[in-house]
Length: 242
Image 1 (cartoon, one colour):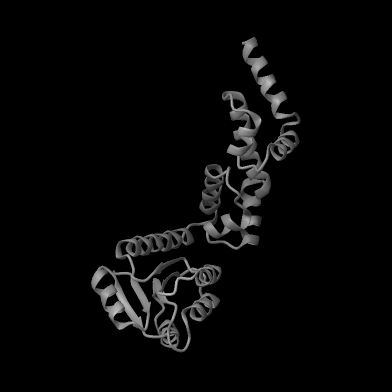
Image 2: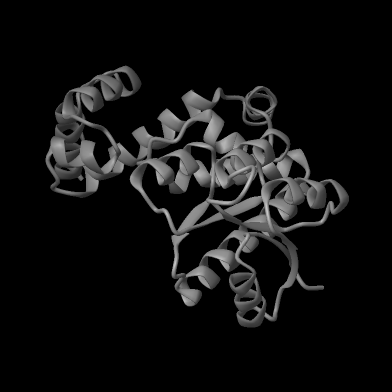
């Protein structure tokens, strides 16, 4: 079944061009914001929206805001001939997923559409998973992204759960709080760096995602009961004894 895309643009020629260039998709069209809202009320299987900014009546930014009041997940790509910094910032703040200035690069737009549709399919698959598999997925995500500034809300959103429910179920299934689990993964990696590499403390802190070595050292002492340098020295002495 073809993915269904809603084009909201008062430029009929552009709508025709997009239909011609993307024959693999099914298109629904609206010439302005109010017409688009009517379409969205009737059609519940729209997979993605291509949205112009400047239209008669309700403009694209106002429509974007109204759509996000009811649907936080549908992919929305802004198409604009008025790509000022203010317009772009406003669109991103109101949770547009991407934007393109006219004249549009069709190949780049196609890549963006396909990426958003893949993400949508991925979310649908995640939503169908049971809670144990979702928590396992979150654990793997933390292990792969220990060096990033990820938080509980980010991971909960990734596996399609509310923050509170994810926090409760994560602790119930793993036996650990989210922050504790993330810290243990990071400290385990820190010990590997200290034991198996010649990286200095600042370099290790950077690889672990810390802004400075002081913060890393403080966390390491709380976790291991000794400083990173003392831990490295201890591991080195143990190696010599062997």
